Length: 222
Image 1 (cartoon, rainbow, N blue to C red):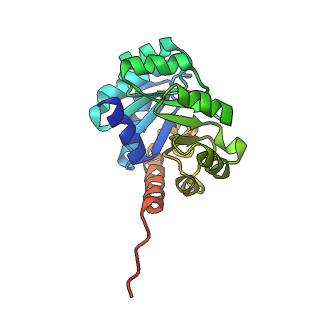
Image 2 (image 1 turned 180 degrees about the vertical axis):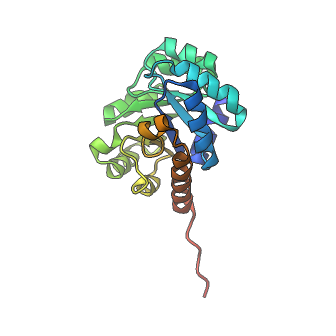
Image 3 (image 1 turned 45 degrees about the vertical axis):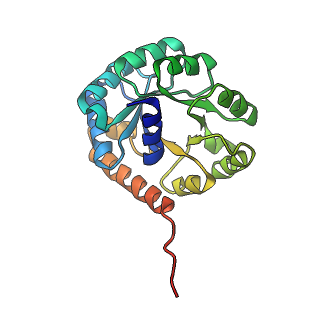
């Protein structure tokens, strides 16, 4: 998939589940469970040991039907390795112009981390595909996103940090192009115990909520 196609898929699905996992087999099972719940996007955090092996295993196992990204990317070396492992997009927690530039060289979509208005301006100038607001909840959640959207209407925002099934609809209405979801879909305890069916059910609930929020109300006829 091209960079544009990857980002279009992220926006269309709207939900980017993040996996913090060190075991390739567990990563594959968790990804498959999330996919069965209707989400074809997954982000694998590079902060965990053996994360690159897990990312490569998931891309080999699930091919083009699931878009796999590398999360918590902090330097250009990680970008290179993630690309070689098959990542389709890069996610950063904080902003790094070098990381965005390296991802651009490989044709990878980038969700660049930022939080304050100044950081948003600096990050967007580097031309990532979207700015990831993290941790969004710490600055007011949907209300904060709505305020930023008013000042930066051309910026694509991914809300991440504190996104739940209960508040995800608010992020749709606040103008997010996507949301990042962690343990609300794939929590560590369930992952380690092999309770992946729970991920399928949670993914299905998130997708149902998002689709309902994005669907225009039916116009009543007289």
